[in-house]
Length: 308
Image (cartoon, rainbow, N blue to C red; front, top):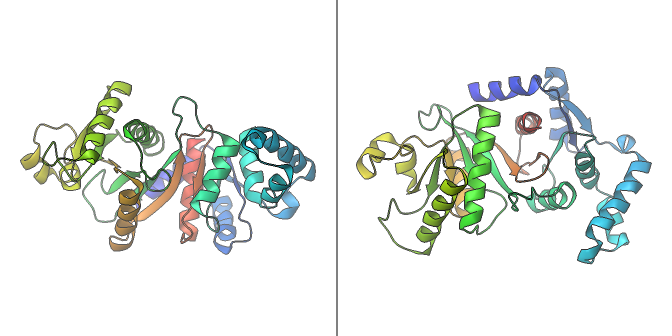
């Protein structure tokens, strides 16, 4: 797939250091070998011998200071740092590595907590979210079958402002990683008022806020998905839209819709799903599906390196 090759080639020019805490997962260990062999990034596979005891103690104390106001005690913090995940997140916070990738044997909630509590949320956005780069074979929609789907992994019921922020960060990732012009569709079961409901109202408000935040972005909605990606349908349902039929970023109304959609496309269309890529944080990090392949790990590292 050309998109995958372009991502890997772009990562090679950056040569960033990406931490992989799940050293005991076979897929991650194999991916690390491929990444190093192909020169995609510099990998820090956090085997026990690569964890500096002095740094670990320092990170434990620093994390305790960060979280003690939330009622976290030192014993609980020490237990967290028995897992290299938190060491990787603190390395990223400090800038000793450029990002981290985990999730092969951790839940999304585990990875997100480590990322949010250690790396921190960008104060301008005040929301962490996620997206997937979806590469669909033999597909003429999007950018020759390439899309960004968001949010599919983090925010269960985003409000209008959160949806606007999710769209904004997805557009930034689209430009930085894929070099595509973002064309954002805010998805719904309605197209431009064809149906009513609280969800429709929320999408309309989100689009309004997005246009205020980024007036130069190509964005439109609310759209049913066929209006968003199929030119022939867009001509019938809403012919005057600059996005209709051409969207390459699909913003879902809630986590349920986004998660179901990406898994259906991944399995039925045999698409590559890179992510969940965590957005809205101070430094780049990425989650993995626990059902990920070796290639998924490689591609997630490549995207994280580009974002760094």
